[in-house]
Image (cartoon, rainbow, N blue to C red; front, side, top):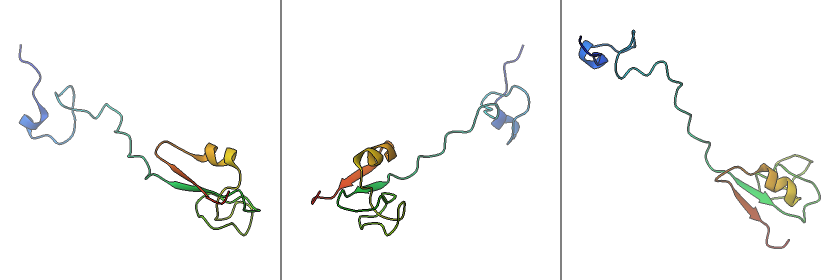
Length: 88
């Protein structure tokens, strides 16, 4: 009895049957993680921003730093950076 034939030996680009080296039945590899994000925290800001800019937000949830450490910490993911305003 012959063993499995590698798909490259048959000139196949897709998978058919049980061909050695065929990974079509495997899930695709995970996509690369998003680039690391820098978040900002400034307790002197009156309004809580989205954490994506160092200057105080003009409206709640707008572009600007977080003003609460708890919310800032909850927003972090692996690889993210939290910059804390030095005046705080």
